[in-house]
Image (tube, rainbow, N blue to C red; front, top):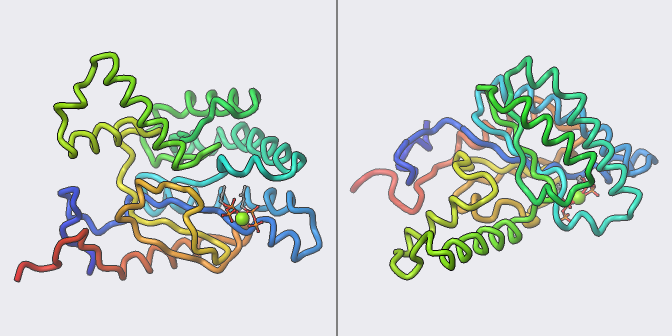
Length: 252
Ligand code: IPE
Ligand code: IPE
Ligand code: MG
Protein backbone atom coordinates (compact mmCIF):
# COMPACT_ATOMS: atom_id res chain seq x y z
CA UNK A 1 0.00 0.00 0.00
CA UNK A 2 1.32 3.42 -0.90
CA UNK A 3 1.11 5.19 2.39
CA UNK A 4 3.16 2.72 4.42
CA UNK A 5 6.11 4.97 5.09
CA UNK A 6 7.68 6.78 7.99
CA UNK A 7 4.79 8.22 9.91
CA UNK A 8 6.65 10.14 12.54
CA UNK A 9 5.16 7.87 15.23
CA UNK A 10 7.53 5.01 14.56
CA UNK A 11 4.83 2.55 13.48
CA UNK A 12 5.08 2.82 9.72
CA UNK A 13 1.47 1.65 9.73
CA UNK A 14 -0.66 2.13 6.65
CA UNK A 15 -3.88 0.85 8.18
CA UNK A 16 -6.38 3.43 9.29
CA UNK A 17 -6.67 3.43 13.08
CA UNK A 18 -8.58 6.59 13.86
CA UNK A 19 -11.24 8.37 11.82
CA UNK A 20 -13.03 11.53 12.89
CA UNK A 21 -16.20 12.81 11.23
CA UNK A 22 -17.73 16.28 11.05
CA UNK A 23 -21.35 15.20 10.65
CA UNK A 24 -22.78 18.04 8.59
CA UNK A 25 -25.86 18.70 6.46
CA UNK A 26 -28.69 17.61 8.77
CA UNK A 27 -30.49 20.94 8.45
CA UNK A 28 -30.13 21.12 4.67
CA UNK A 29 -31.35 17.54 4.32
CA UNK A 30 -34.51 18.33 6.30
CA UNK A 31 -35.16 21.70 4.66
CA UNK A 32 -34.90 20.18 1.17
CA UNK A 33 -37.73 17.85 2.18
CA UNK A 34 -39.90 20.57 3.68
CA UNK A 35 -39.21 19.29 7.19
CA UNK A 36 -38.10 21.03 10.38
CA UNK A 37 -34.31 21.08 10.82
CA UNK A 38 -34.60 18.87 13.88
CA UNK A 39 -35.96 16.03 11.69
CA UNK A 40 -32.56 16.05 10.03
CA UNK A 41 -30.87 15.64 13.39
CA UNK A 42 -33.26 12.78 14.24
CA UNK A 43 -32.46 10.99 11.00
CA UNK A 44 -28.78 11.61 11.62
CA UNK A 45 -28.92 9.34 14.67
CA UNK A 46 -29.54 6.37 12.34
CA UNK A 47 -26.37 7.30 10.42
CA UNK A 48 -24.43 7.40 13.70
CA UNK A 49 -25.62 3.86 14.44
CA UNK A 50 -24.79 2.48 10.99
CA UNK A 51 -21.40 4.17 10.77
CA UNK A 52 -20.38 3.16 14.30
CA UNK A 53 -21.27 -0.47 13.64
CA UNK A 54 -19.38 -0.42 10.36
CA UNK A 55 -16.32 1.32 11.80
CA UNK A 56 -16.09 -1.34 14.51
CA UNK A 57 -16.37 -4.04 11.84
CA UNK A 58 -13.53 -2.41 9.88
CA UNK A 59 -11.36 -2.76 12.99
CA UNK A 60 -10.88 0.93 13.76
CA UNK A 61 -9.33 1.70 17.10
CA UNK A 62 -11.27 4.93 17.44
CA UNK A 63 -14.12 6.77 15.75
CA UNK A 64 -14.55 10.38 16.85
CA UNK A 65 -17.79 12.16 15.98
CA UNK A 66 -18.35 15.93 16.16
CA UNK A 67 -21.81 16.09 17.70
CA UNK A 68 -22.01 19.60 19.19
CA UNK A 69 -19.56 22.46 18.95
CA UNK A 70 -18.86 25.32 21.35
CA UNK A 71 -20.28 27.55 18.60
CA UNK A 72 -23.52 25.58 18.19
CA UNK A 73 -25.02 27.34 21.25
CA UNK A 74 -25.59 30.26 18.85
CA UNK A 75 -28.42 28.31 17.19
CA UNK A 76 -32.08 28.98 18.07
CA UNK A 77 -32.97 27.85 21.59
CA UNK A 78 -35.50 25.34 20.28
CA UNK A 79 -32.93 23.61 18.04
CA UNK A 80 -30.37 23.44 20.85
CA UNK A 81 -32.97 22.01 23.26
CA UNK A 82 -34.02 19.36 20.70
CA UNK A 83 -30.38 18.43 20.06
CA UNK A 84 -29.78 18.00 23.80
CA UNK A 85 -32.87 15.78 24.13
CA UNK A 86 -31.75 13.67 21.19
CA UNK A 87 -28.33 13.32 22.68
CA UNK A 88 -29.67 12.22 26.04
CA UNK A 89 -31.97 9.66 24.41
CA UNK A 90 -29.14 8.34 22.24
CA UNK A 91 -26.83 7.94 25.23
CA UNK A 92 -29.44 5.86 27.05
CA UNK A 93 -30.81 3.87 24.08
CA UNK A 94 -27.38 2.90 22.78
CA UNK A 95 -26.16 1.18 25.94
CA UNK A 96 -27.17 -2.39 24.97
CA UNK A 97 -25.64 -2.16 21.52
CA UNK A 98 -22.40 -0.63 22.87
CA UNK A 99 -22.10 -3.44 25.40
CA UNK A 100 -22.88 -6.13 22.79
CA UNK A 101 -20.23 -4.76 20.45
CA UNK A 102 -17.78 -4.13 23.32
CA UNK A 103 -17.49 -0.46 22.29
CA UNK A 104 -16.14 2.02 24.81
CA UNK A 105 -17.86 5.40 24.81
CA UNK A 106 -15.74 8.45 25.61
CA UNK A 107 -16.14 12.17 25.13
CA UNK A 108 -14.08 15.27 24.52
CA UNK A 109 -15.22 18.82 25.15
CA UNK A 110 -16.43 20.99 27.98
CA UNK A 111 -19.01 18.39 28.95
CA UNK A 112 -19.43 19.96 32.39
CA UNK A 113 -21.46 22.73 30.72
CA UNK A 114 -24.00 20.38 29.13
CA UNK A 115 -27.49 20.21 30.69
CA UNK A 116 -27.53 18.00 33.82
CA UNK A 117 -29.61 15.23 32.21
CA UNK A 118 -27.19 14.90 29.27
CA UNK A 119 -24.15 15.03 31.54
CA UNK A 120 -25.59 12.33 33.79
CA UNK A 121 -26.51 10.06 30.84
CA UNK A 122 -23.04 10.59 29.37
CA UNK A 123 -21.30 9.83 32.64
CA UNK A 124 -23.38 6.67 33.18
CA UNK A 125 -22.70 5.36 29.65
CA UNK A 126 -18.99 6.17 29.88
CA UNK A 127 -18.79 4.34 33.22
CA UNK A 128 -20.80 1.36 31.96
CA UNK A 129 -18.59 0.90 28.88
CA UNK A 130 -15.25 1.85 30.47
CA UNK A 131 -13.87 -1.71 30.45
CA UNK A 132 -15.00 -2.58 26.92
CA UNK A 133 -12.02 -3.67 24.86
CA UNK A 134 -13.29 -3.00 21.35
CA UNK A 135 -13.40 0.25 19.42
CA UNK A 136 -13.57 3.60 21.20
CA UNK A 137 -16.46 5.79 20.13
CA UNK A 138 -15.55 9.32 21.14
CA UNK A 139 -18.25 12.01 21.04
CA UNK A 140 -17.11 15.61 20.76
CA UNK A 141 -19.68 17.44 22.86
CA UNK A 142 -19.53 21.16 23.52
CA UNK A 143 -16.16 20.77 21.84
CA UNK A 144 -14.04 23.53 20.36
CA UNK A 145 -10.41 23.04 19.47
CA UNK A 146 -9.30 26.53 20.52
CA UNK A 147 -10.97 26.02 23.89
CA UNK A 148 -9.27 22.62 24.20
CA UNK A 149 -5.87 24.21 23.56
CA UNK A 150 -6.62 27.11 25.91
CA UNK A 151 -7.67 24.65 28.63
CA UNK A 152 -4.47 22.64 28.09
CA UNK A 153 -2.34 25.79 28.27
CA UNK A 154 -4.08 26.79 31.50
CA UNK A 155 -3.37 23.35 33.03
CA UNK A 156 0.26 23.59 31.95
CA UNK A 157 0.61 27.05 33.50
CA UNK A 158 -1.04 25.85 36.72
CA UNK A 159 1.35 22.87 36.93
CA UNK A 160 4.24 25.27 36.36
CA UNK A 161 3.05 27.70 39.05
CA UNK A 162 2.58 24.83 41.53
CA UNK A 163 6.12 23.59 40.87
CA UNK A 164 4.99 20.24 39.43
CA UNK A 165 6.86 20.97 36.21
CA UNK A 166 9.72 23.34 35.39
CA UNK A 167 8.61 25.16 32.26
CA UNK A 168 11.90 27.11 32.04
CA UNK A 169 13.95 23.93 31.83
CA UNK A 170 11.70 22.29 29.22
CA UNK A 171 12.72 22.01 25.58
CA UNK A 172 10.15 22.95 22.91
CA UNK A 173 9.61 19.20 22.37
CA UNK A 174 8.95 18.74 26.10
CA UNK A 175 6.40 21.57 26.03
CA UNK A 176 4.73 20.05 22.96
CA UNK A 177 4.46 16.66 24.67
CA UNK A 178 3.23 18.22 27.92
CA UNK A 179 0.54 20.18 26.09
CA UNK A 180 -0.56 17.06 24.18
CA UNK A 181 -0.87 15.17 27.47
CA UNK A 182 -3.24 17.87 28.75
CA UNK A 183 -5.72 17.72 25.88
CA UNK A 184 -9.20 16.32 26.61
CA UNK A 185 -8.26 12.75 25.66
CA UNK A 186 -4.62 12.12 26.55
CA UNK A 187 -3.22 9.24 24.53
CA UNK A 188 -5.77 9.63 21.76
CA UNK A 189 -4.61 7.47 18.80
CA UNK A 190 -3.10 9.63 16.04
CA UNK A 191 -5.83 10.97 13.78
CA UNK A 192 -5.44 9.39 10.33
CA UNK A 193 -8.49 10.64 8.49
CA UNK A 194 -11.02 13.42 8.94
CA UNK A 195 -14.26 13.08 6.98
CA UNK A 196 -16.62 16.01 6.52
CA UNK A 197 -20.04 15.42 4.99
CA UNK A 198 -22.34 17.72 2.97
CA UNK A 199 -19.47 19.00 0.83
CA UNK A 200 -18.11 21.62 3.24
CA UNK A 201 -14.35 22.17 3.26
CA UNK A 202 -13.71 23.63 6.71
CA UNK A 203 -12.41 22.39 10.05
CA UNK A 204 -14.93 24.52 11.99
CA UNK A 205 -12.69 24.53 15.07
CA UNK A 206 -12.44 20.70 15.20
CA UNK A 207 -9.24 18.87 16.22
CA UNK A 208 -6.84 21.57 14.99
CA UNK A 209 -3.89 20.10 16.87
CA UNK A 210 -4.70 16.48 16.06
CA UNK A 211 -5.14 17.21 12.33
CA UNK A 212 -1.55 18.44 11.88
CA UNK A 213 -0.81 15.52 9.58
CA UNK A 214 -4.25 13.97 9.18
CA UNK A 215 -5.74 13.32 5.76
CA UNK A 216 -8.96 15.07 4.74
CA UNK A 217 -11.87 13.49 2.85
CA UNK A 218 -14.88 15.57 1.86
CA UNK A 219 -18.06 13.66 1.06
CA UNK A 220 -20.89 15.35 -0.84
CA UNK A 221 -23.43 13.20 1.05
CA UNK A 222 -25.51 14.90 3.75
CA UNK A 223 -25.14 13.20 7.13
CA UNK A 224 -28.68 11.69 7.36
CA UNK A 225 -27.93 9.74 4.16
CA UNK A 226 -24.34 8.78 5.00
CA UNK A 227 -24.02 5.00 5.23
CA UNK A 228 -21.50 2.13 5.14
CA UNK A 229 -20.51 2.52 1.44
CA UNK A 230 -19.75 6.21 2.04
CA UNK A 231 -17.39 5.31 4.87
CA UNK A 232 -15.82 2.65 2.63
CA UNK A 233 -15.25 5.32 -0.03
CA UNK A 234 -13.50 7.53 2.52
CA UNK A 235 -11.26 4.66 3.64
CA UNK A 236 -10.42 3.78 0.00
CA UNK A 237 -9.56 7.42 -0.64
CA UNK A 238 -7.30 7.38 2.42
CA UNK A 239 -5.56 4.21 1.23
CA UNK A 240 -4.65 5.94 -2.03
CA UNK A 241 -2.84 8.80 -0.26
CA UNK A 242 0.88 9.10 0.26
CA UNK A 243 1.86 10.08 3.78
CA UNK A 244 5.46 11.10 4.30
CA UNK A 245 5.10 13.38 7.35
CA UNK A 246 7.57 15.90 6.04
CA UNK A 247 10.11 13.25 5.14
CA UNK A 248 10.78 11.44 1.89
CA UNK A 249 9.13 8.26 0.74
CA UNK A 250 12.40 6.52 0.02
CA UNK A 251 15.91 7.42 1.04
CA UNK A 252 17.73 8.62 -2.07
C1 IPE B 1 -24.81 19.11 11.59
O1 IPE B 1 -25.81 19.49 10.71
C2 IPE B 1 -25.32 18.84 12.99
C3 IPE B 1 -24.86 19.79 14.01
C4 IPE B 1 -24.07 20.81 13.80
C5 IPE B 1 -25.33 19.57 15.36
P1 IPE B 1 -26.24 21.01 10.57
O2 IPE B 1 -27.36 21.29 11.52
O3 IPE B 1 -25.06 21.90 10.67
O4 IPE B 1 -26.80 21.02 9.08
P2 IPE B 1 -26.67 22.20 8.02
O5 IPE B 1 -25.22 22.52 7.87
O6 IPE B 1 -27.45 23.36 8.56
O7 IPE B 1 -27.28 21.63 6.78
C1 IPE C 1 -19.69 21.71 12.73
O1 IPE C 1 -20.75 21.93 11.89
C2 IPE C 1 -20.18 21.23 14.07
C3 IPE C 1 -20.75 19.88 14.11
C4 IPE C 1 -20.85 19.05 13.11
C5 IPE C 1 -21.20 19.44 15.41
P1 IPE C 1 -21.41 23.39 11.73
O2 IPE C 1 -22.51 23.24 10.73
O3 IPE C 1 -21.80 23.90 13.06
O4 IPE C 1 -20.20 24.27 11.17
P2 IPE C 1 -20.21 25.59 10.28
O5 IPE C 1 -21.02 26.61 11.03
O6 IPE C 1 -20.83 25.25 8.97
O7 IPE C 1 -18.77 25.95 10.13
MG1 MG D 1 -23.75 22.67 9.30
